[in-house]
Amino acid sequence: MIDSAGFQTSGVDGLRTRGFAFGGLRLSSAMELPFLSALPQSSGDADVHISVSSNPLPDGELLHRSIGRYGLELHKAGADWLFRHGMAGVVVAETGRRLVCHCPDPADLPLLAEILVRRVLPRICYLHGRLPIHAATLSGPAGAVMLLGTSGAGKSTMTAALARYLDWGIFSDDMSVLDDTGPVTALSGTEGVSLWEESVAGLDIPADRVVPMTGYDGKFSYRPHATPPAPMPLNAVLLLTVPAEDSAVGFERLTGPEVLVTLCSQIVRFNRRDVAENGDLMRRLGRVASDVPVFALSYPRAFAKLPAVAEAVAAHLDCLPA
Image (tube, rainbow, N blue to C red; front, top):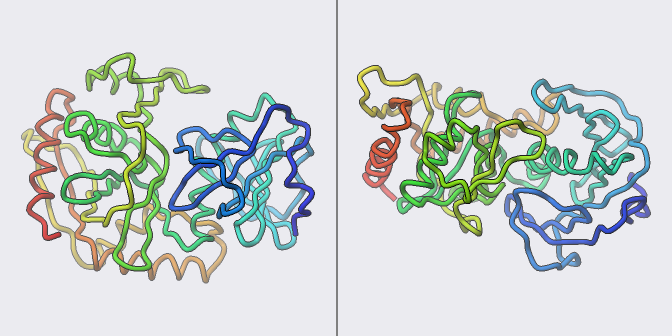
């Protein structure tokens, strides 16, 4: 197990404990966590405690190496877990209540904080009974709606369009977290949405409403609201499909095994080698598929069409039963 002494900030000056919220969890962190809503400092009742150490990341048994921007590795070290990116990473206690961010080079702290928020915390939510899924989620008058799609399908641009043109709140633009212990409920994740420069210009977002993202060339953070939405029942799931050739907006209800396949394609696993975990996620996603309607959404991708697309989405969701 992780030694409790490891939860004292060591070798990194100027870091004080702050409170943040993510996926319905209260975090007490010794490092600044980007894209998250800040809470009043109250480490005593936090669900997750995060500290920073300048010590080298411990060794562990490699279980999985992901592809993508971060190339994150999952290791096992006794009863603890290790998420590694190069020489830096996060040690997770078995229960998911204590995390140590190992960062020998302080210059790597911003990247490690981004990895923690965007890739590690969604998986920590699973250890706390939440259901993480690779999707964007927003809050509208008819309830929460989740946007599914493969990388490049347009989730972030559609998220920004719904927020900009309809003033919808954003739960998360990439990794969503659900509470499925009762009625399926969307929980807050990262604030705002990350957009490439083309989308910022196409949506005509004012320059003073976006901030350049560190480590990305031509990508910006757009936060239309100061605080994330409160938890809200999930009213629908929209699968972003191929663009409509006739510029019409179309909704097709998906049913049967196709729905479960759609949801499972965006599953977020803590340990993909764990057979019991995979079975648990499949069972829970099956319940989501039976309780929440899923639609394939086709629409023109031209930026000039997106205000009308946003209105069509809102009208469709308004017709669904609460």
